[in-house]
Length: 340
Ligand code: XIL
Image (cartoon, rainbow, N blue to C red; front, side, top):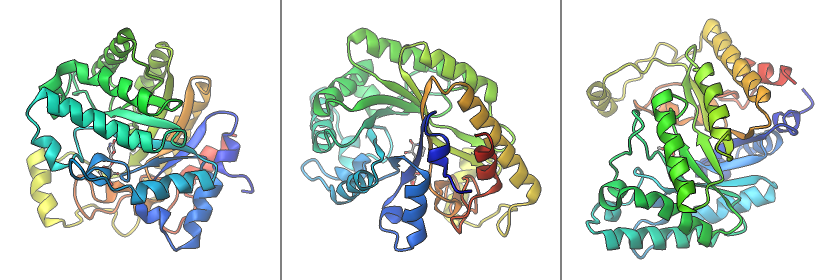
């Protein structure tokens, strides 16, 4: 109990967490203590997304971004910027762009301003997030619709120029699944062929209890590493609630927000144990491939702060992380520590 997660895994890979304004400004002293004890890497959960830092064509807001980077430096952490180009959490003016010239101008000014502001301070950027469909084809985002594939190497070129020295990543969910993985491999190879630099790929790692795709994850680590880039798990959480509703159903329920899950009051021991064993097996796998994995980042600090309490249905109670709502380590934490 005397050593922490980041210390236990020090020689293997970085151990990260996602931070929001709430965690950075948290007055509860347990928060900063736990974060600085357990983690040596941070990712901005929302703080550096375009809708927050670049709300209008000619307006930027770096108040929180500056605090985020200060926080990481104060604690000597590896600081990840998330994310430069993504089809979600984009300000309205970008959705209204219709021409190639305007969209190229947005990409250039946005990446120069945001990546450039923190050059030499942010150590790695999720340059591009979620550009693929489940079948491995390109997502029909505003970027792809107007610019075609070229927007992808362009983003990496711009980031390289704006933030020399920062590692540049492609980040996506479900890219351990075979079809999407094949799409990601093609995407990465095509970036490399244009001469643009890409340093790593992030497997987000939003998985479900009892259904973690260990074999696909292992295959993906091997195949991505064979491209000559770093591999990381960037948004790890293991959801304990069923998510089998249709999209229409979810949209409907998002409006009315009752917490319909069976675990609102307490997570049953059997599920708690399954969660712990899933985390244990995941970290066993990560350790097996420690030479290929550079970082494992959890998507949040404790269960109470996880985005999964509100997604895809508002106001659910979820338990996807390894610290509970009182900042106490859960059985999953003990299992991960017992591997060392
Ligand atoms: C999520 C945040 O956790 C939420 O707080 C926010 O409301 C929506 O975005 N994939 C990503 C992340 O790359 O940026 C998303 O983060 C989760 C899914």
